[in-house]
Length: 387
Image (cartoon, rainbow, N blue to C red):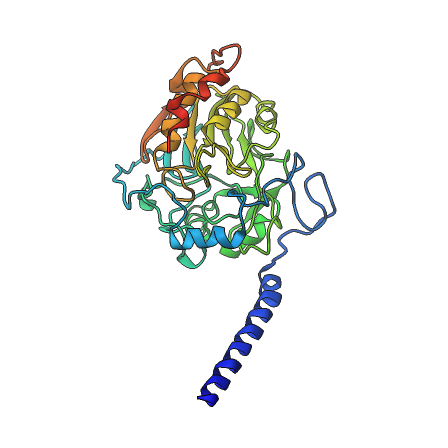
């Protein structure tokens, strides 16, 4: 008995030593430096930051990290149940859409195929079944809205940041190997994407790459953070994008919180926005929450829509991967009510679409707006009681 207890004691001591070494060594091992350069407005020489205030480091619950992780792992977070599978009708889009005509096909989450001017533009491509390292992580509840074999040849690929639900290296490699598109991302992400063998253009906010005369891809500011392995937090930059186009620009917000909210108007300075892709989901981690520091919900999405002066918008970043507590259909249902309260007179200008639906984007028209939003409307039961 004494020998057994002694053996158990030694095992406990060994486990403590191993745990201590892991805590000391593993974070350093997982901290990868993706970008080298002098300090600048969004970079302190080691890590990137949000110049409008870095509020994204805290947990969205406001509690402890251990309790947060435990509630996610053991399912005690009180979140709304999601369906395991949602049936869709996948699209078989045209190979090209020429001239000023524009179509958009939602593949799911933040992946959108936009076709216009004979160009096929793809955002944050994710065809994998799970969002996370080693194939582990939230499983998609809808199949991709376009089967990979039905995806037309991609000319422009933009990648907003390095979170797994936006930077899926397997999908990027498949597209690169097949199509050799122009890949544009923000600083530091070229180190990761380059592991696929792809050639990448990495830019800072405000910089651009010309694809052809009159068509540029501009990397623009938003409000977020980055990490692949926790310890490498903010070693690479996050961004949104403007693609300048003769018939009106495309704006892709990427993954973003609100911050100072001025980044929408900054993007509008590059010209009229014909189509905006704006996230509306993954905003609730405690009861009644309408946004978190790193994710806007429908209320803030409507504000960004108005600041862009966009003619038409499609909501993204909802309904594919369960990343937060709200029900799967809460973001689009809430958005529909918020738009009724907001500045845009026509609710069809910013509405949810089905995964796999090929949407004909209307020609740019300056939107008709109310003189001011109606805050009291946002406190109504139709919005506040949605789970």
